[in-house]
Length: 450
Length: 143
Image (cartoon, rainbow over all chains, first blue to last red; front, side, top):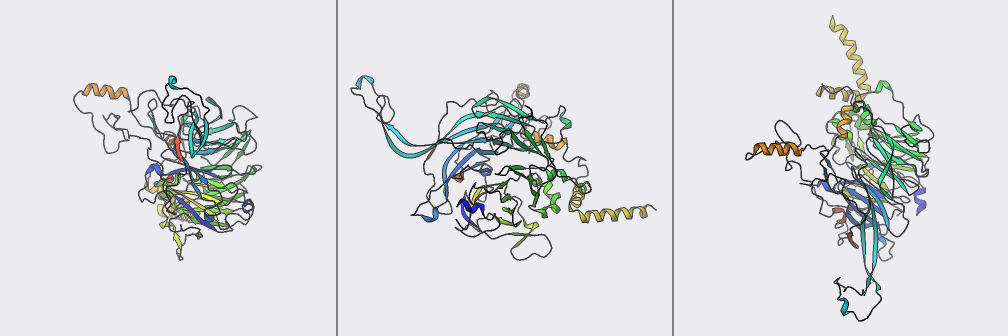
């Protein structure tokens, strides 16, 4: 089925509901709000992090002839408390336990490893399975009590016996005290040995084995904080070149840095910015140009940025403008005043590529999410809702009406629910399976062919 | 005389606002908040962003205030616990208690749609890791 991802993009075929996880409660507890979603490299595991600092990992069921419809279903594999709330007395700072990002490490042995981070601390978690237990110890009983050594008359060799599968999660490394400001990104390098962590003003390089030191590779803190004009909003390593990374800013620019050129990458190698028409500048221009997410394509040739109203695809070889621009919800441009007042204008939407880089997806309001096919230039708006949640039900395209006359099935801009935001989405690395986080619920959709 | 000078300017602005919904929105915002800063993306806005999570508690102030007051109560907190005004000294009780989530995430619970039994196929357990260093926060005890 890997070919399916190579075919038409997300907007061409039909998407069906597969599963939804989470409670149906009207009253959503803050801790249950999903804050990050990430497939691992094979797509067999899907991790979510929430505001309560918890991680839940789902595993894809193997094909099972007796239950043909369960193929591709994701069920709970492991769950653990990754981060806890803390209070820094020295700085009078409350440190939220909210998981900002999860990034998987490529699998190298039977265990799975992931990095999870809150505002201040990154943790490396090992998730391993245990399905055997040793029985017949000499020095202790089966229930763990020590045996009296004088009573032992014969020796025996302990035997490994099968046991019910147990999945254990343990923190293997804790990378702390390296960030004064709030961590917004982590990115595992293609060398599988290092990773970067970025906060508002600095980016640090870590080695996965070493927790007591990290190298600062970008520092944009001005000598005088009054002169602060922009902050770092996201950062990512290039998927193939271990010396290259990019970081985006609140001013809508992206800087590509090469670690071979200098130890401190304050001077960029490439600077990506779309020229702005000065006559169209308004109070909101800078705020809506702030980039909330940056993602390299799987090919490494392109990168995608998400700002408040659009998604842009950039060719790494062309710095002066993006090669493609997709409007996510242009109708919000005439609502910017109220979106500023209710703080929605500061919402940080993420974006993602499909496995073949032929399609991109990002979220919007009213539990809508958008997909753009880069080849056919078609786009589609879908909704993650309980109403369209019957097994294998095909999702109906949604449309927002901007003009006066509202057609049947269309929804007017003023009726959109701005509390239902889809900020986090993920696309399976090879197949057409997507995970969409709608506040406290996780929706999984698949294409009809599956 | 002044009126005839004003009119052409008004028409010009109107045209611009029709062309740019953003400008119309900006006008609305400025009408509501006339004191809004000139540089929206400037240092004030960014500084606020960088200081997210700041709660003011000074153990020195608190202990001195307690010593002065002796039997009397410290001035109690107003409606907004996050706002420190006047003689109000924040107390450990004022700081919202951040308890860690002891409840399992609902995502790991019952699969509502298929009505199956709880989906945990295996026990999920956190094992204590010997490599786990101490917490990064200050060594003063938690409230």
